[in-house]
Image (tube, rainbow, N blue to C red; front, side):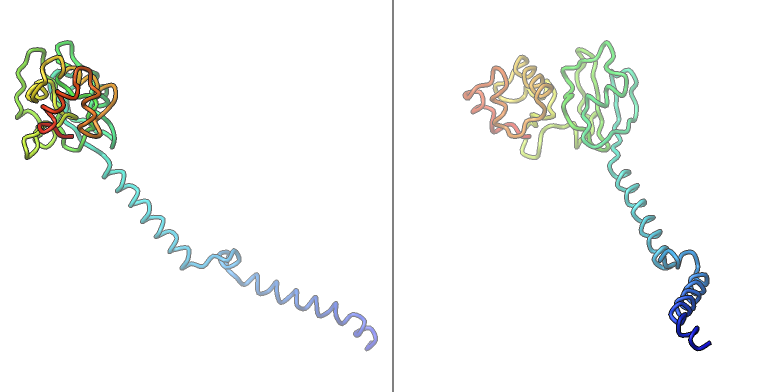
Amino acid sequence: MERIFKQYKFLLIAVGLLVIVIFLFIGKSPREKLGIHTSDFSAYLEESGQKEDEDQKNIADMKIIVDLKGEIVNPGIYEANDGERVQDLITKAGGFSKNADKLKVNLAQKVKDEMVIYVPKIGEEINVSLFDEAESTTNNSEGKVNINSANKDQLQTIPGIGPSKADAIIEYREQKGEFKKIEEIKNVTGIGEKTYEKLKDSISI
């Protein structure tokens, strides 16, 4: 008997250890088997919820509300995304009406929250009070005209700028986008160095 025990001693020990391991494993919860602790799992859920709330808040902060008025097919309040331009909002609203004076609207201007975009009729005198003061008045505190947002009438208040040059500036903005520096106005057809010297102290971007 003793000889048999010695012969199978290691096998018996191995079987005994296996039984102990199986017993301990069965006694654990499913999460413990997978190495997941309740506290860690709760922290993960809480962190995920906070991240989702932050993402939703960031999306809400990026929303821009704009008021479209005047000669537009469907005027009203529209929601815009950051980086969109006046042209994008007018397209959303169905485009210009047949009586719209398109030359008096800066289509390349980026929209901002609480902005008012007013499209006048052809031949209509623009009432500045119709515009949002922060967005539509193109003169800054020094009395300079913002060449990125001024309409045709406002551009003509700049020394040396008449109707044809005002149209050229608007056309340039629509094709090239906003001016990055005032010197770029010399790239507009009809505006050379002499004209620039006359107007450089009266414009801004």
